[in-house]
Image (cartoon, rainbow, N blue to C red; front, side, top):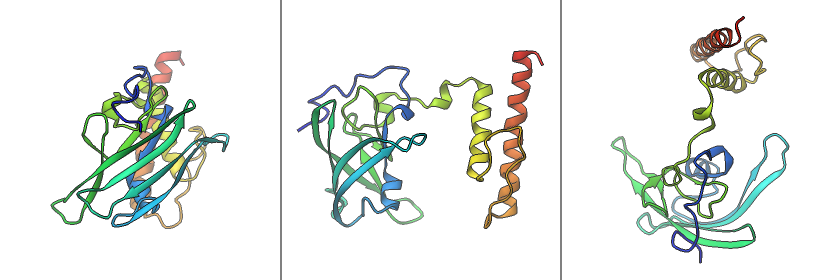
Length: 203
């Protein structure tokens, strides 16, 4: 059985970012009922290339969240032809406002994490801190970071990501206050991006 002591989970490039690999998002898994607190379930997960709609990778899993103090998720998949099969322990905390919050226990460093990542070169899903992963946005220049943030808002509203086009119309059901706040934030990002572009390229 694979795990933190049987593979080379710690081998990665310092330039590797979260977006280069696969991510297990516990909140998303619970929301989509792939993992169900209080139940024992099994299934498979697939990652897709957003640009080509082609399958990037898939894994099988089994999750037992019946007992909050003995819960686990078992992951099994092949990495470069090598089978990996190991359990990730789960933990719970009780927020002061009530309810129960679930966490992965990182198999590499034992920390609680809402997301686990498998970057290129790794064989174990572990926390971002364990792999010391960054994000694409952290490696962008400030100019392109502002552009990415503006495009993300436009995309969220269902419009074109081209900042030279009209700002997207308010989606049905969105409150005007939220829409206007997003518009102001997007305009601020675009203005900063344009100012930096003018200084950089001299126009």
